[in-house]
Image (tube, rainbow, N blue to C red; front, side):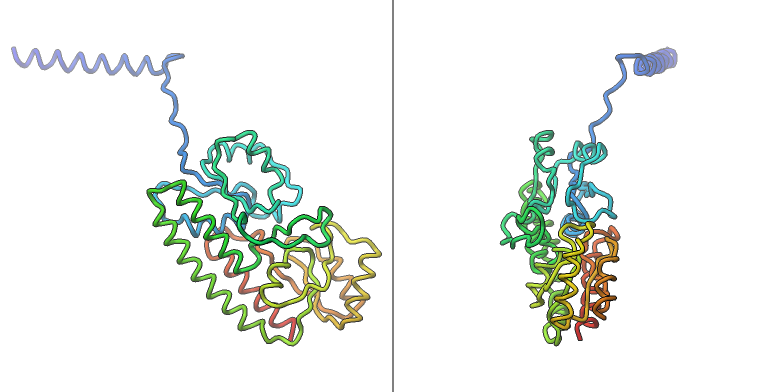
Length: 304
């Protein structure tokens, strides 16, 4: 008797399970997929991504995604794509450089008014953008090692305020990375402080903060906007300046064509070197330090 009752109970369970499976496959009965995690941090472009992965590394269930492709240079006139907006739809935090870099930020705020935005440059003293057409603040803050350290602290504070349960982890990660950046800065000063030549010609305004930090002087920039060829008059003016001041090094950037720098070199006898403003590169946490160490070696050789 007991065995018969047990068999009947098992049979009811099997039938009920089968009916539930059929119902789940019917229109209107399908379960709603789980929403994606709201612990996704999106960064606007490469240098913000490198800073943020150093701060958020190892924090449970937090994912850092870079919005633009790692081959994208500075975000001058960058137009957002549908893929960019899709990435931001899944984000809880958007880390930006600020200082006018992300011209599309108003659009983002309009479409995602609930999105938490961390402006890494908000409290940093900015310099003027010299030759650039808008003459606004120079946004290339991260190229200065000291200001990159300030950005790291700002991002860490913003993430700690968002994710209070892991605030101590963000702070510890940021402090650890800041120590590595401080060591980088010490190496840079040791290599650059006593070089006999201090004037440089750069591709565009990316190295203003860097030059100020290491007591170099940007005598001229070749392009008013990245990727835009200088006029014949501008090129002639730079050639005269290089000849008059005995400048021996002209610096191109790996993200942009170097034809104009080459033309200046041919007319002056200066040599062309490459300085990397760290706006693209490998997506790993050590990349910024490696890029700046390479810049240190290049400058130490070019300005002797």
